[in-house]
Length: 291
Image (cartoon, rainbow, N blue to C red; front, top):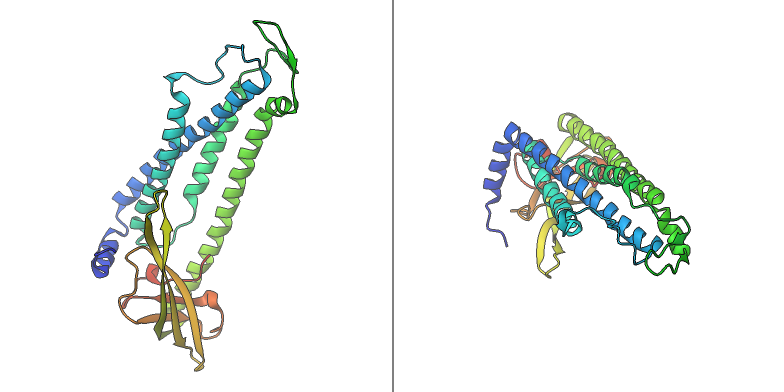
């Protein structure tokens, strides 16, 4: 369990918000993540080229179907640097952006950058793949026991077409999802800004708190946030309830009350209900519905 003081954490977050040093660090870290995503794309493409070579050429074809600029371990280095760097870079860039924005919810730009970088690497590398000695035949340059390709050989032969196509489609889907998420997020932030001026505030009672956890590959469980349920009375005297997810291991409510911001003209619209778990909340501390 974390012993961090929530009040001190909020003070640090307010101090970091708008600091351009965190923005610069976020940009640098995002660029690092993008470069590592390119390496990950090259690792995928190189592995596909190697498997393709083994499926369409003889085992005695001694051409190397993979790069050797880092020696025999080149493919392993590409996978290790690409995977670890993309993951670490995305976490770091996300943290720096969060610090700069003061905890404001972020559009999913990093996922789009990584997916597009990997797709570009795969598309650019595919034309350089090892060509077969003869289309349709696995030529044996040693014993001359040539064999026609199987179905898998033909599938492998055209991998330089369908694998880049899949990479582009996946990247396009990630970008499309990010754009839709950004649109929903913009609408939510606009609603919040409007309600901070025109909306109604009410005091609510926290009726339920449940920790949301995750388990790593070593079986260790850690808290990533809390699901909080708040009951309040709207402007018409009706009892209502809203459930929100408060991210962060230090986001557990410190009291049994919460502030609720809602639209008095549409009190039943859950998308127009925002909850703050601390007094005197900053705009990013109002928690809206999932987008």
